[in-house]
Length: 267
Image (cartoon, rainbow, N blue to C red):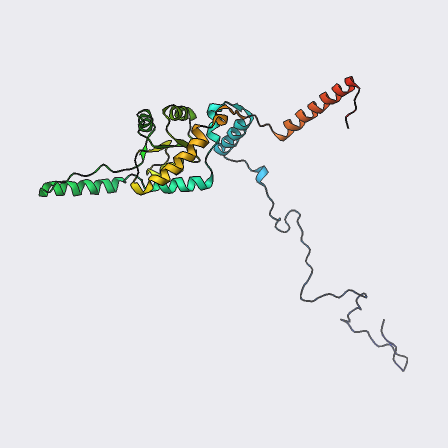
């Protein structure tokens, strides 16, 4: 309503007059309230974790199913022993030693043979010593173990099929050759310039590395060659959460039934 003037006439109200805001609420003109409309055709939906709803590729699903199946099934000791591997610090020191004895690459071998041919052509042929390098290849390593030439054998834990290396630990124990199981066939593969390697072996080392090799061989003998518990322990048999709860309930019901027969009370 307009204000009444002194003469009795009404004065028109201001057209853009601001209404007085309610007490205690002050609005900041810089930050305007814009509520989101998340309905169809409205604002962009917030990011949600849709991992459970993704249809993964078949190879991923097969990997996961295989992993679960290996957990559920009971695994005999001969296969379960491959889950007993050396720890991170031992693996680091072992790989450091093995890296010193990497075999030469194809490029280096070609260059060496060219130099030898040039020297032979010029007449100054000299006898070269046999290089001390890592031995790899399943058949080669097996022959070295049988002839007791291997000083240390390193076997990968994830060889597929596992049957190809399943006999190696027993053979090493029989021939009293120190062996160990390491995680990752690809790690052994990089040492010998291959994608993967099932096992590698050391036959000889330089004089300065004898002490380190002896220390590693001694510790691996105690962990693997002389460890009877590993050879007897079964693996797998780990059920899912639901199955575990069901078995627990069954066991509890059996205990209550037995207590009733004996006249006891179980809380």
